[in-house]
Image (cartoon, rainbow, N blue to C red):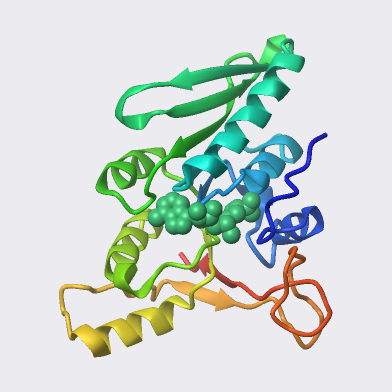
Amino acid sequence: MYTFEKCRKRFLPAGVERLCDPDLLDIGCARRVLDMGSGLGKLAVQLFFSKPHIELVWGIEFSPSRYAMCYEVLRELCVSNPHRLTFKEMYGRSAGFQVTEHLPQQKQKQKRRLRFFCGDMLSSHFQKLALQQHFDVIICETEVPQTRFVTFLRCFKRLVDQPTTRSVLTYHDLDKVQHNNNNAADDEDVDIAFRYLKRCYPDQEQKRMIKTSWTTSGNSIGHVFHIWSSQR
Ligand SMILES: C[S@@+](CC[C@H](N)C(=O)[O-])C[C@H]1O[C@@H](n2cnc3c(N)ncnc32)[C@H](O)[C@@H]1O
C-alpha cells in the first residue's frame, strides 16, 4: 500500500499483529484505541484498516513534519479510494484530520473513524478531549523526558482510570517512574498508583519480543514493552 521508510523506531506489521493478542493488548474486544505519540501513523493506520471491529482510532503527534507525512499519505489514500474513504480536515483548537470509512448500506449508522491531531498529548486540552472518548486501549510508545514525568503520570492516571480502559502500553515502567518520582519530589499530590493494573512483559528469554524496526539486544529484531491490563 505505502511505506514510511523514514520511520526507524516503529513496530513492524507483525509486531502490531502480535500486540493485538489476548495476552497482550487484547484488541479483539477493543472498540476505541488511542495512540499517544502516533509518529507517522503506522500503528494507528494498521489497526484501523486491519481490525474492522474497532470503531474509533485516535493518534496525536507532536512533530509537525511527522504529522504532515501522515496527513499527505492518508489524504492520497482517500482520494484514490473515494467510494470507501472520506478525508475531512478539522480546524480550530482541535485541528487535525479525520478519515471515515463508508460502510455497506445496512451498517451506515456505525461509522468507523480514524482521527489524527498535531499537538502535545499531555496538554490539558487534549486530555479533556481524550477523556470524552472513553478509550479502551491506550498506547504510548514514546520516551517522556524526566522533566515531564509528573505531567505524564497525572495525564495517564486520568486516562487509564476510566472504567472503559482495559489495556495500556508504555515504554516506561510506570511503577518505577512513580517510585523514582515520589522519591525525588516527595510530592504527595502526585498519587499515580496503577494498582488496579497487572503488568505483563513480552518475554525476551523465550523470544516473545514484539517485532519492531529496532532492537535493544543483539541481532534480533524486537523490543520489550510494558503492558498493563485492567483487573477490574
Ligand atoms: C516511537 S514514535 C511512535 C510511533 C507510532 N506509535 C507507530 O508505531 O507508528 C514516538 C512519537 O511520539 C512523539 N511524541 C513525543 N512526545 C510527544 C508529545 N508530548 N505529544 C505528542 N507526541 C509526542 C514523537 O514525536 C514520536 O513521533
